[in-house]
Amino acid sequence: MALKKLVAGNWKMHGVSVDLAEVRAIADASRQYPQVDVALCVPAILIERAARAVPGFAIGGQDVHSADKGAHTGCVSAHMLLDAGAVLTIVGHSERRDAQRESDSQVQAKAHAALECGLNVILCVGESLEVREAGTAVQTVVEQLDASLPHEPTEEAELAIAYEPIWAIGTGKIPTAAEIGEMHAAIRAQLEQRYGEMGSGVRILYGGSVKASNAKEIFSIADVDGALVGGASLKAEDFLPIVEAAANAG
Ligand code: PGA
Image (tube, rainbow, N blue to C red; front, side, top):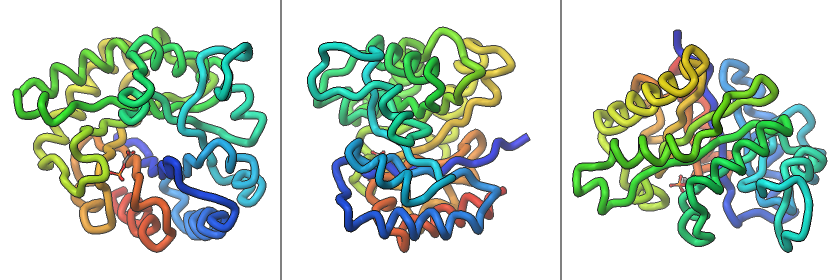
């Protein structure tokens, strides 16, 4: 049975007070599509205002620290995100794995801390262009996933995976449908191996240059249970057609 689709926006380092109008527009229009879960992961400093602006709509963070509190200047804990009104967070985005040199084991610790606290998690994995061209993308991503996944799935909060080929992020390039299908099937197999039956219920999102014009095709691929959308999530007029495509994909 197909899983309910999740379409999550990743605003990255975009968004100030005036952009709350887009959050409101996206949240209001998304209510027309109860068959899809919709979320926006906004900059940490905007979470509380966004959550207050759209009660009941899923607002998320883009990263979380693995510790509950302590001497970690500039960092935000899962408890703080929840306290601000977030219900989910991204962990292990390639921009953080790269710029902040986050390792698989740090990503695993972040995912574990968030889930334990009751914060839903979107855990990102994906290969570089070099790896894709070398023909080892599936093996690399499965290894990255294996090392990044929390040991146990929790009942308290939901884990989702986002497959985001690094070379497809913000570039307008996307893998072929066959390449996406092959990767999502491999991720599903790994989740089932790790978590048994619970692995079949973990949603696997595709991310990397998703837009209105390619969403329908992407959502028709087996084991694509939604999307993580960067650039096209900043404006309601770009994001809502993607939500609509997910709704129509069933
Ligand atoms: P993009 O970003 O949709 O702008 O390619 C996706 C992401 O980085 O999550």
